[in-house]
Length: 325
Picture 1 (cartoon, rainbow, N blue to C red):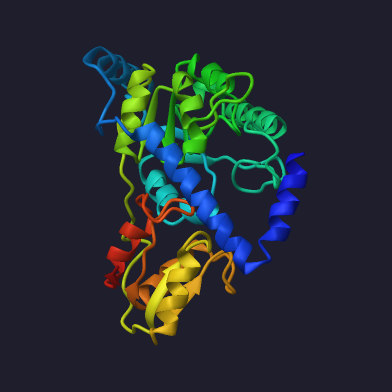
Picture 2: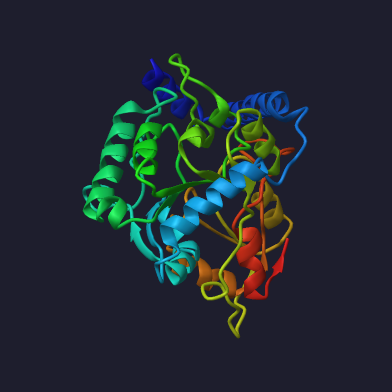
């Protein structure tokens, strides 16, 4: 049934009027669910009490204090995002093994058509692969930290618990907790997003202050961990050749904003999935940002024009000497 709905929606989106109607409905649904989730939430920087913090510090000191560089397994989701500075920076402080699928492709395996909330087939493949890499790296004798951007939809919490029980430090990075779908449960009461893994990791690093309170309510360790950038990747170039640049996926209100700017006579160059350029490499994105006079940022969540979130470009653009709007 989900596949049928997917193909029907894809067909209907060929109509501009139906696309607009879909955007209105999707936006209203997202905003209503967001309001229900975060309405009475007070933003927080940490859910850790002193006892939990001391316990975590003790585990870290016991595990990595004797190593010059901690041995790290990184589990990523998006090559372009992760190699735009994060993995480079992580490699400066540790010896990093990057998670790849069995065929060598970067990142967690995910379904093309999302039929259910939890993707059991891909979840098992990713979990088995992670544990295999863990064992190949020497298990707890060869690994100090497992860290990644992971969701319960694609990783079984029990594999993280299994690794964590050996004394390895397990950390998860949550960048998408403003999306209500990540707080939903399936018919087996399995939470979908990073929150679905929170009880089985030592700490969740969260880019949303609002979400931290919801982790605290569930007794889960979580701290505010804002995004950043790497000046070694993003830097200005001497000749600025683009008036205005936008790099990102073409969804939601983005196309409308860009079309109106172009209609007003502003020369906007667009790059990314859904635009003619297609996906760019991290090196290409950094070069284009460096060549831009103005970098445009559109940080709305989904189809909403009210809910926004921080994006990596909010930080990347500032390193390039461009005016960021």
